[in-house]
Image (cartoon, rainbow, N blue to C red):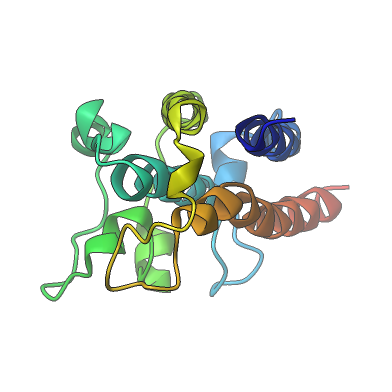
Length: 177
């Protein structure tokens, strides 16, 4: 099996688990926080998709993020970034809990459309990847993050946040039983 096929299959399996987890979730449930300082599932999905977009479309390649190319950045209102905003702020990194709590995620259908657009593009990046680039470091400020690192993170990042989504939705379901 080619490494590119392995990466794609792993990402597909992880995404299928995410989709199974959120099946039938309402907009209200998407915003449920098991604790006032916890992220809600809507934010976590947004963060998963935005991070994948940044990894594959900005750092592994420089094709530009689906977030900008597809007009998603103009469709959804995010909290106002702090004046000293970190460039990765738009993927949800460094948001305060007040910003997470106050943010209204877009309708789930729309959020998933963005996630699918990102995924289609990520798979194109993986398909076309020259494996000789695996040790390449696309961001000099992160010398420990190679192209191979981003390929691993394509699955690991989402899988890590799945646990948070599963936990939050599990508490919600248990409280309504």
